[in-house]
Image (cartoon, rainbow over all chains, first blue to last red; front, side, top):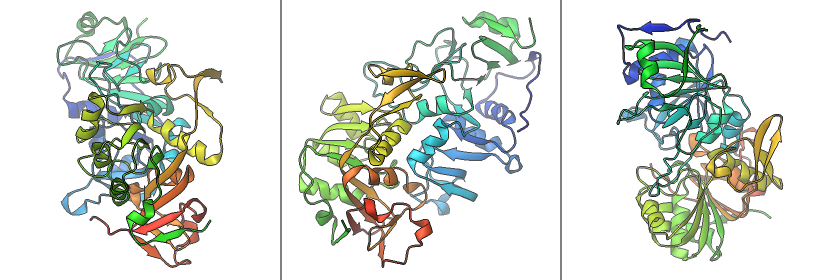
Length: 229
Length: 223
């Protein structure tokens, strides 16, 4: 393992950003070390797969019992017995392996996955994650594998827009939505900035299209710049 | 007890009683024992507790069983899907009880039932709504939640191939919950695409050994 080292000091990419979904996915992919075993959550995180070149040797895990999952199946390849966690038909790569659900989740819970990439409704500066339930009275609660992934993978990356569609920040001092896991998130990749989160609070590693000071003003969380004092 | 090779799905589900806990394999439609569920609908058993990852897709299989009002309670990890309209309606009308469990906890609770484990502590869900009211314990500096096994009266699973002893092999991601559910129920019924003579399956490749399986029935693959 030779993880990509993030810039020691904050970098402001003022001429670039906010990032598109694919640019965010590419940014996440850049931090996935060669040869990692990775689970990409359903929805936006699956885009990360498009930015992992084959030579990166990253092995994708899908919760429904497979390692070395390949890309989405094209018309002639669709097999109803071969789907991903989002129930989308996929393909298998050489070296793939199948296993049952208890084994698949033992892999997560047992700390064997290097990284998982999840979407989120909210992440707190302490690394709490809320991504399964809005808690609204009419909502049908559905957790799937989110809680197992959140506490199981060695490192948890969140990929999300920094603001919701009403402009409300999703990086927050405390989650108001029901938690998926407490203190489980390591990195948050957003369209405006990349953050390290955890017991030490939120550190900004880089910004996209916004100066650090402006970013700090738009969020309620206390930020510190990476490499700053 | 040796396996019974059944002539059709109706024979395979015969005797399932009202009020039973039925483990239903499958993840989405992969590995979903649709023909067994259709036979269960014809059988008419009601007041069922169903344990399955999802709460039915579209209008067939588990969704059809729900639609007929045969399910009193469902234990699953992910009921809300784009095509789970049958469950969504019944849930909103208060006509079906829901217990949501994290997917890995659901699988492990089934595994524990099959393995004779009385209960286990898991870090999954600690500090969340799904751990409310459950016993917790600090183990190695981390909060763990006490989880109990889920035992079925019956398991309905979909496998790829069986031999005449009841050994099973699966196909790709259709394996999912089949092998754990096969260990966790009093009566285990498997629908398969092919039944081969004993000795044909490679013993190294058997996923569910015959000891777990009570009834097998061949169905014609949908695709």
